[in-house]
Each structure stands twice: as structure tokens, then as C-alpha cells.
Image (tube, rainbow, N blue to C red; front, side, top):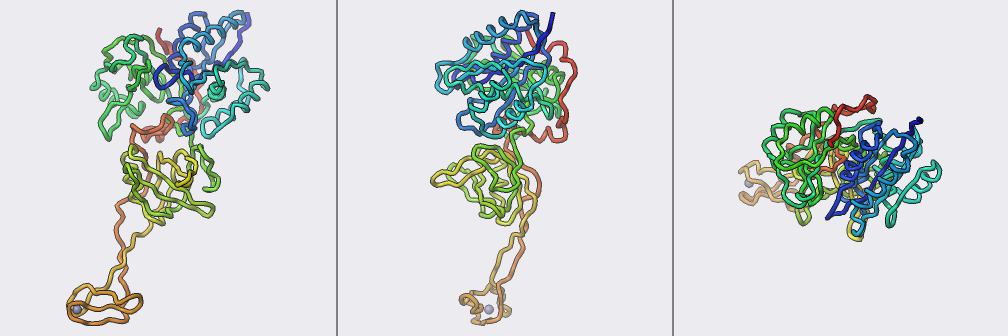
Length: 446
Ligand SMILES: [Zn+2]
């Protein structure tokens, strides 16, 4: 019997009020395993460019990579389509599910490039459709079919470079919508016992657990980490106080900074992309309503604004401490220019590369009585108000002030980090090659 390889991409099935594409993938894992299908990799959870304005909640797309007997190919496709149909929130405006079936052992380079573009910039449905035709992939699009973009991107992102894992546990349907019941103290212990090999368990600024989402979706909790073994072990350390319907380990691009693309000059910044850019602070920080901090940077080609919003926590204080002349590298998503606002980078990280001298100029002191002199006008010298002495040749005195800010890398508080943001804990743990080993014994349940 000949074995075939298929890559199944899924995207955009959920809405704010219902569903989760990872849950559909988890259901399909059970169904497909039941058919005798072999998984050649963990299901992948690929986060796409977080700055596209029409994104779904977490902007995550999924891919299942399997080997199977040719005779059940039709059955596999039927199950995938009917499951997506049944569990998508098709009534919600802006939920436009897509499915891509690509058969073949290797993914064409062009589809891999398309995936990289979908993660850092904006791509068009037209480009996805052209690739589907060219490489004879099949696609099913519901409504506008926009979900096909993310589905194809999930197929094309094979995570050969840096990647992480997440174990996701799901609730039974009758509990969805109610408060999640998990012993929080055990999450703090789990974090301590698995650090640095798990990440984003806790927001240390607010001392709050962040592995349990808040919404009505079926996810009970998710633990992110460096290997399948680690996330599985970490999950076992958490005391869960409600039934777990199922769990699956996903391979992901979360926590890898995969969305950020370095630009050579500020003029290369494109709207809705995610960038790393260097420049000199060219306008001092100003605080705008709701306590957001805005400053401008420029290089020889252009000036852009950078914004640290209130929820970014300590990053806002760093931004507020910058002065004109500081050299910085900024990381973040690009918002288009609008009527009253130039092109703006929403900051995820700042690296302070060089601090400018902070200098203040003061009037000199009277040599006779020690009182600070009054200026008599520009270049007209100074006068003492106490004793009446005049000094025509004196200049203002330059004083260098100590900066409160230190050089280095700063990033937004854990609670406001993007799924894709590489947290401090992962620095130095980046993987430079994809894993090719066998999957661990039990990577899903049931
Ligand atoms: Zn005097």
C-alpha cells in the first residue's frame, strides 16, 4: 500500500464570542488518528502578522502534517471539511474560514516564502490563490475565503528555524463561558520549577497568572516552552480543578520574534508590517491622554513616531526617559499615517544603544554675594538683583545631568506581549534548526 503525505492548513474559524481554530485541530487529531493516520510532526500553531487590521483574535493558523493510505484520502478531506463547518462561527461577520490540502513530501520554496511574508507583512488572497493553482493544492474557502491565506501560510511555515511548543488543554463544552478552575499557586510553583524552559506563565509586574485565557473559548490553559517533554511535564504540575476534555502539544512560532523584520532605513517601513528599525530620537517624549507616551525618531531618510501605550507597563517609563539625540533600536507593529498622526510604530521592545548628554544651562552666580544672576537679555550680560553688580562678559554655565535611563533592551510587560514576541526568558535559548526526531509517545489526549 502506498503512503501519501498531506499537509492540512486551517485558519480563521473563530470569532470573539465563539470557537478556536486550535480546538478544531485538536478534534481532528483524535478523528484522524482514529482512521489510522500517522502524524509526521506535531500540529503546528502559526501566529501571523499581528498588525493586519482585519485579524481574528489571536491571528493563529494551524497545520496538520500526516501520512496515510491513499484509499482514505477522500474520507480525510470529508472529516476536515465537516469539522470546520460544524465548529466555525460562520454567522459572525469577519469570520471567513479557509482550509488548504497540500499533498507532497516537501513544501515548495515559494509557499515557504509566502508563509514568511504572511507572518511579517500584508499579503493578498490573490497571491495565495495563484500559489494554490501553481502547486495543485486544494482549498476550501467559506464566505470571502480570506482564511485561505492563513491556511496556506500554516502549510508553508515548517518551523525549520527557531520554534517553541505549547500544550493546550480544553474544557468540556458545558463549562465554556464560566470561570476557569485551576489552582493558581501550583502555576507559580510550576513556573519556578520549569524556568527558563517554559515562558509567559506569569506576569511578574502584576504577579498574575496568564496561562488561562478569560474569554468564552474552549481553552482551559496553555503552557509554552522549549520542548514537548517540558510543556507536558509543566502541565502535569498544574492542579486543574475541572474536567479536561482533551489536550494536544503544538509546535509553534510563538515567542520567536518571527514577525519582526529589520529595515535598513526608516523610509523602508511599510504600513501594517512588523519591524526592527534604528534611529535617533528627534522629538522628546510627550504624554498624550490615557497615559500613552509618544516620541519621534529619524534617520537620514525619514521621521516616524513611536508609541508606548499604557498597557505596555514599564516600557512606557523607558520611552518617557528618552531625550533628543539618544540612539535607539525600536521593535513593533506599524500603524498607517492618519489625518492628525504620522506613521507610528507601536512599541513591543526598545533597545537603547547610545545615551545623549543631558545638559542644562544656568545663569552664573554673583561673585560678591553668591546670588544667582539675572540675564539682561541675549548677549547683554547679567545683573545681580541683590547687590546691583553687573557682569557683561559672563556666559551661561553648562551642567551635565545624570541620565536615569541605562543602555540596554527593554520590552513590554508580559501581559501585553504579542504571541510572537520573544520574551527575555528565551534569549539564548533560540533554536537554529528544526527538529527531525520522532514525536514523543503521548503528545495528545484522547
Ligand atoms: Zn550680588
